[in-house]
Amino acid sequence: MNLLKLWSAHDERRPWLCLLVSLLFGIINFGAVVPPADAVITGGKGNVDLPDPGWPKGSHEIFNSRFRIAWWEGPWN
Image 1 (cartoon, one colour):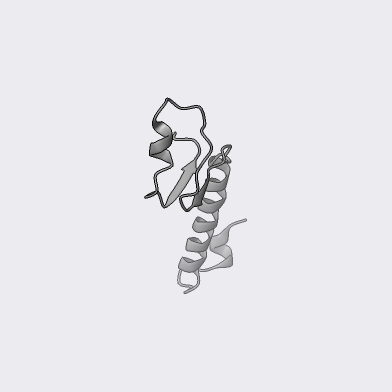
Image 2 (cartoon, helix red, strand yellow):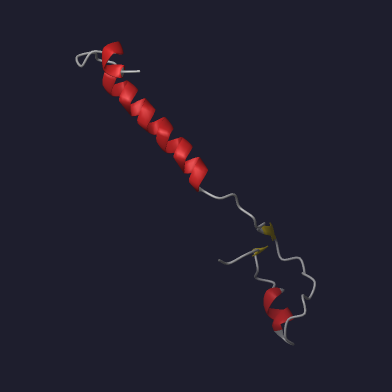
């Protein structure tokens, strides 16, 4: 299909059509290239004491500080 036959070079809609087609092509390709996320990041608000995850002695006082306002866990890469 030749688009030049459908829309002449002087048609005012032609630049918008080219822009629309380019944007749709970019969006479709972006969705095909980006892999799905395979990790879960979770967190919470407040300073409720968290259970000890088995870290070294003394770290419990650091991660259960009364000044903590939020926490999160998940991958760092």
